[in-house]
Amino acid sequence: MFEQFDQSTLLWGLLFGSFGLAYFTYGRKERAVVPLACGIALMVVPCVPFFIAHKLLMATVGGVFMVTPYFLRF
Image 1 (cartoon, one colour):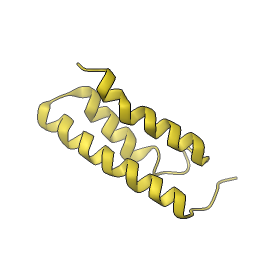
Image 2 (cartoon, rainbow, N blue to C red):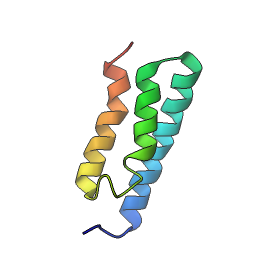
Image 3 (cartoon, rainbow, N blue to C red):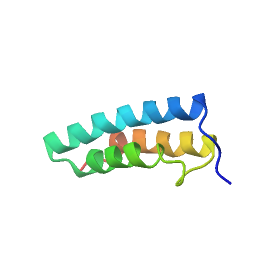
């Protein structure tokens, strides 16, 4: 049912988690909602395989969350 962790899953999780921490810190410091929410999503969703089990879907969702603060500025 769930894929096991392998090297690519861990590296995607590390990449998205790093960007998530940066967005979260920036959003908290600047009181910006969109980077804060995207940061939380990037730290939680791709790193937990219960939410997203497929690698391609995880990369797509992570990429969307990474570019969202660039296009949505509130």
